[in-house]
Image 1: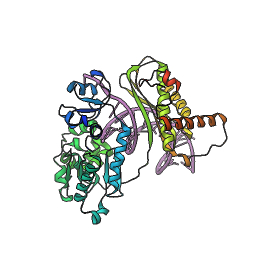
Image 2: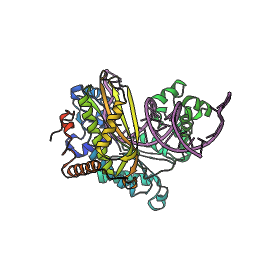
Image 3: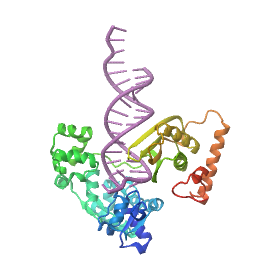
Image 4: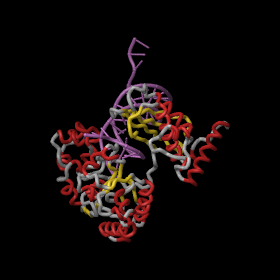
Length: 390
DNA sequence: TCTGGGGTCCTAGGACCC
DNA sequence: TCTGGGGTCCTAGGACCC
C-alpha cells in the first residue's frame, strides 16, 4: 500500500486530501521527539520522508498537517485489504500491516495470468477502499518485492523470468531487501555499488564481507530465491515501549511506566489468548545506549502483577544507579504458548486466583468502556506522560 | 541533526545433557 | 591427568524491516 497511514488519514478526513500530511510523533513546534511514521506524497515534495526526525519534518514544512498514528484504524483497513487478497489466492503471506506476498500460481487457470490478476487486485482495492496499491509481479518473492517498490505510487512492475538479471543488475545495493546502513557501508567500502556488482563476487569474497549472510545475499542478488509463500506465521513476541517526552531519573516515574507497560503487554497477551514464559526489559539511556535484560519463568503467565514483578526485577539487574537519565523503557513478552496448551496450575493459590479475577474484571471493564476506562492508581498518580484521566 | 514503536532473525558464548 | 562431539536452551546485543 502506498503511503499507507497517511492515505488512510486522507481518506477519513477529506479536508486533508491533496495537502502535506505527516503521521508520527507530536512535533511540538519543532521541539518534539520521535520520527515520521508515514507522510503523504504532498509532504514528500518538501523533502519529508519516513523515519526522519519529526523536528526536521517540522522545519521543512511547518504548515503540514501533523497527526498521531491511529493504529487501530489502520489495522481495520488492513483487514479489508487482506480480505481482498484472499479472493485471489489462499497463499497470502503478510509481511507487515500494509504489504503481502501472494502466490497466484494456482489461480492463473481460473483468473487469468499474473499481470491480469495484479491489475484486478489494484482496481479492487481502489474501488472498495479508495486506496492506492503498488504491485510487483515476478517468479520469486525477492524480485517481486523489489519490483513492487520501484514505481510507487500506483505502480505495476512486471519482471519476466528471463529478464531477472537484467532487471536487478543496474539497481543500487540500497534496493536490496535486507541490506541496511551497516551492510550497505561494508559493501560500498569494497567498491560494490549495484546489485550486479554483488551478484558478480565470489562466495569466498561474500563470506569475508558479510559472513553467512553474505552468501545468501549473493544468491538473492543473482535473482535466486526459492523461498515459498507461507501463510499463517505464528506471532513470536508481544511488546510495548515508550520514549519519555524528556529524559527521566525519578524512580516513581520509572516504576509507574514499567507498570503501565507491563499492564499493556499483559492485557494484549490475554486478549490474544497467550501466556508468555520469557520477559525482556529494554532500557535506553540519555546517550542512546540500549541494553536489555531478560529472564525465563518455569510457568508461563499472562497476569499483570507477574509481568510487572519481572519487569522490576529485570530493571534492578540493569545496575541503574540514578545518575544517568533514562530515555526509553520497554517490556516484551516472548516464548509464547496458547493458553489452552499451557500447563495447568499444580495447586490452588488463593492470592493468584485473586489476581486472575482482578485481571478478568479489568479486561471486562475495558472491553465495555474502552481501553482508557481503567488505569492503575500508580500509573495515574505517577504522572504518565499521556496524562490519562479517570 | 537527532534518532518511534511494532516486530523478526541472526550471532555468539556459556550451561547443560547424553 | 587430561579431558570429544553433537545438540538444545538461555541471554545479550545488533541488524534490519515497515
